[in-house]
Image (cartoon, rainbow, N blue to C red; front, side, top):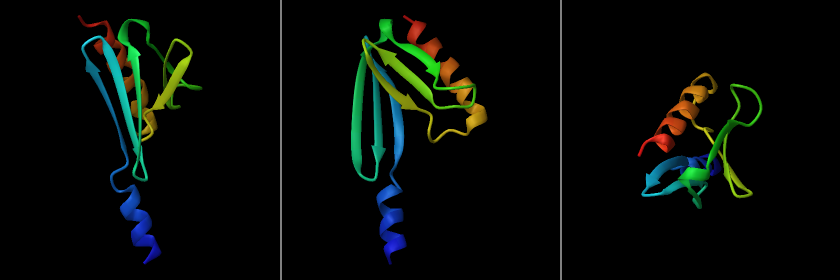
Length: 90
């Protein structure tokens, strides 16, 4: 029974990255807890945390958030590139 409760709390875990006007918005849900971070898109830096297959760090103005936890490690560089392209778009 405990395993089902644990699974239930993590079934909706995930990350959402979106552009809303001039803001990059990151929402991460873990075990029913929602975290939200917003950045001015013109100041965001996109970097691997450590090495090409690591999590992706999005940072600006002394704040940072890691994303890519639910993406296979070999696909994280492509995700980082896609985020960079979206940030550069008008």
